Length: 176
Image (cartoon, rainbow, N blue to C red; front, side, top):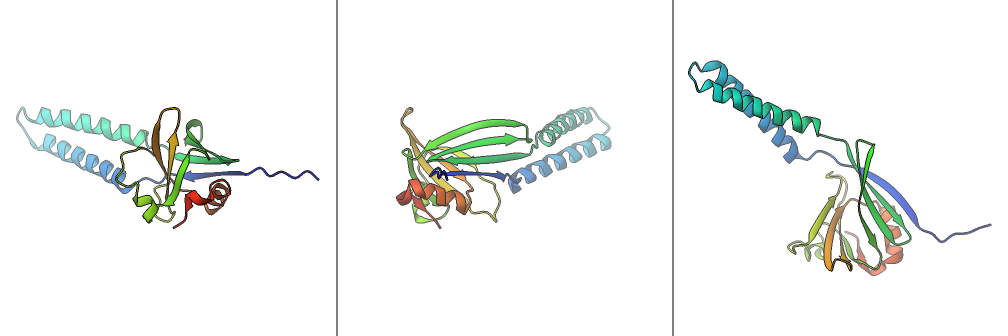
């Protein structure tokens, strides 16, 4: 029988709308209603300014609602290489980054001592997490040799993915 030592883990996490995004939409809707109410109450030439404000706010609301897309992040880990892709509306796929095991400096749970070392360091950051409070987020720090800088990835891996990553980088994976 053929036996392979290859490691392959694939998983997807669905992004949940954050409270900040929800509050922004509600605030715009409230301002839209206020400008419409002001337009209907006033009888002078200022009412047209409120009409224009209502139309502009309504267009912004429609733009935000239409662009509220179903977003998922897919993590593919194959033999020491982590690829992260963004999937929009189950149809459009965009490869965000690939991290090789040699580039990896650290993977740690958010809030642990290891992750706090990089909390105030200005690094290019990719937020590929689920924004779900029930799922534990992790920070991955790696070095891009070609471009010569470090970068940080916030993501939501499962225990299976962390186990696979620890096969290749045992000392660099910190679970919280």
